[in-house]
Image 1 (cartoon, rainbow, N blue to C red):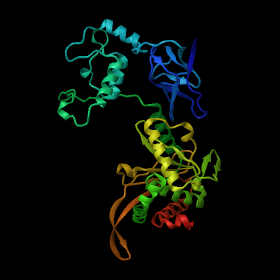
Image 2: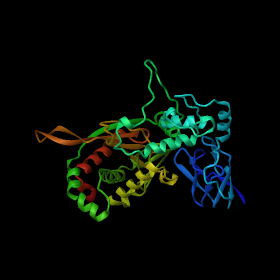
Image 3: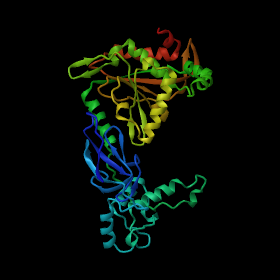
Image 4: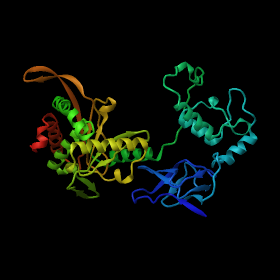
Length: 405
């Protein structure tokens, strides 16, 4: 029986998506619930699985095509036996046509199908190093993917000299590579430009002595990990400090909706996470009710999902405040950009030992610069500075978090 495979039903905040990768090709056997295609939206990658055992009869929407919510992207035949080897891909007609017109590959030159050429450019692969299996030596998309997979499986101990030599670049050449933006990267670009254009954004700075927090972590990290099964990091402590500060300064936890100021009676803190696809901001819900171990576990979970492209839309929707830690990449100071419709974002940075004056004496202390970017339409400078000072005081004296002072 033939059925239709449709794109997932997108949430209201997502207008459309793009077909990212077909994991199964027409004629190739599929098992029930096996991943067959990824749909990329401006927030997450959604997976579409096989509805039953069978084969894909026809791919209607190819890689790179735009799809709307619930749109038909392929036809599927239940119960049909697929070929043992992957059948012709959606690029097969183009590959066949090019193969019939192209002569056998000359020495040092490779004839690539359009899809293979595109994938080779994305992966940074030298086409001349790939053995084509198509007609007249045509390099297909599957050949490129196999070459990439084989390269990943080479043991790290193999000397660099044993690896395939990179394509030589002639003197005077100025190579370029043009790659289209992913939907996520395009969305990030639009949101950042919009934030700068539509908000009266300012940044205030302060510095914090990290020694008390580092001493606390050193003292309890082993017992914390033994009890909770997770390592104690600095991010969870900053999340708790920010939560307490947001309760004291509710305008920093608010958002702007048109001419209205919306005050939130809860703290949902987004934590910026870097992934291969770009920066994503999953949200920790109700951080006031979360313990340090709960926060640490959730951050690790989000980090793993971000790397694997498994974050759901609901996990990145909402949020009343955001924390970004550029220090993990070595940033000493920066001005983080607002995450609309939020009105403030906290930037953490690299911990660096610096000479500081303490009680008339010079002492070497591990210091961190903190930055708070805020929307001046909603937050006055006084509140912004006091909010950042409150975080500084709680980090330098963690007992304040427990005692609420």
